Image: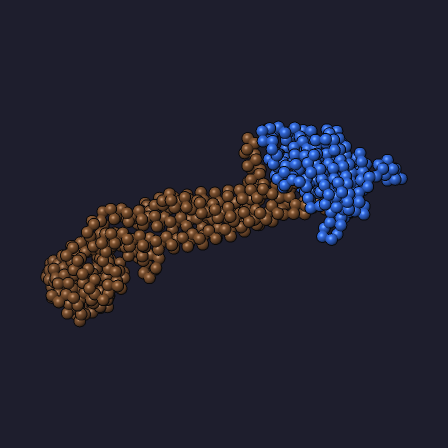
Length: 232
Length: 407
């Protein structure tokens, strides 16, 4: 896989007659983090669903590595999603009556990697995020910050090359937000492309590049100017 | 290790949710299965018991059965020499005797005409057909029978009880509710009515009667000389002359097409097979109904389960599950439920057979064939597979994006 982990070309998306994204292109490289900001309903999450291969009903092309998603069947896309992409959601989307360990097993069981000891992988990932002590706890026993870290650990369990986070700190206080964004930064350094959708500039400024979706288009923002503007 | 984790996590998540619904589903399918297996068990048991009886049946035996009212009247007309005299058996209830005399009389007084319950064929010398000999006196004449005169043939036990060592012939016997009867003969005591097979003959039941028709006389041949049940009397004509005489008379009669009364061994087997076909048809219909019932249970359970687990489906898809994975997951879950129900129903039938064979039914053993079990397993599996496919397909088509609430 080349340096460009994701390449979205000339993408348009409509819900019925309503156009949401109009001929946008976007690329994400390994080892960099991207923030996508925009008003509520601007189409941030729609873009994320497309990039995350969850939504394939769009015009244009999406390349994950060298694979054009448009050419793949459901099974192949699922495998690509499982292997290359990790998701982190605002509402965590963890299975509440499962333990942390069992939640982390889910992506592993859908992977082609059947030989490696799952327990080792999970233990390793939980240690990285300093939450090994939560391994056998049920999700509904955890705090919001702990849940989000578990969600990140689950997203990373298959060593993905892309991490997609949709409002990952939306339910967290600022202290926890900083912790999560620091985690994302360290993940980025392991040659992972991190894409974060947020409406919070404080979160966006943790990322290397910031994009805004406005009027159905995506535009790159000058990060330095943006920070200055926000600060002033 | 990974394999167990994969199966547990990927294919058995249903056991983490909806425990009550799962239990109810398993119970529902188990009940359906037990009903089906019970039916098969009955058919298989009849066959196995029949096979055992038929093996012992001589080739040239003629089994005569279900003598009807019309039949007696006809028989009465064909024997001008009073060699073959129809008569009616009545069972004077033990209850009445107990109340009246505080005696527990084991068996009937036979020979009253007033109450028709069932019948067999006496001869002058007694009841050779039933191996019951006259000890004293005679049986009644055709004229006495026709005019329904108050004459009675009593058992030896009855004679002893009412008349001691005195000769009862010519003496009177007051039968409560029926009036005064003159004793004309004494016969050997009948055996106890311990015939469990008569229980199989539920009067008017179209389901049970076909088997009772063939089973009772054959069972009679094997175990009893005289087989009585209310509404039917089955008599085995072991003496071929008698049997042939009745058979010829019947074949020449107007009733030959109405009453199929006499059978050879071969025709008995044929009739049994015909009856069994009726049973099989009935149980096939029952089986189809049960399959439909199981189908509805599974579809219902799976749809409820899916609706409660939409978020889980979305998460699994986001984490790499394909449509195929989701379909397989739900089908596998349904098959696991069916497996437990199947196991449970087989266990219940196994223990039921063990209990029934302890001795509830004398001389009748219960069994179920491997063929029936295999048919059950295949039928149920196919139904569950089909029933779970529809909800599973529905689950795989759910809009994942909505379930994850990403927008």
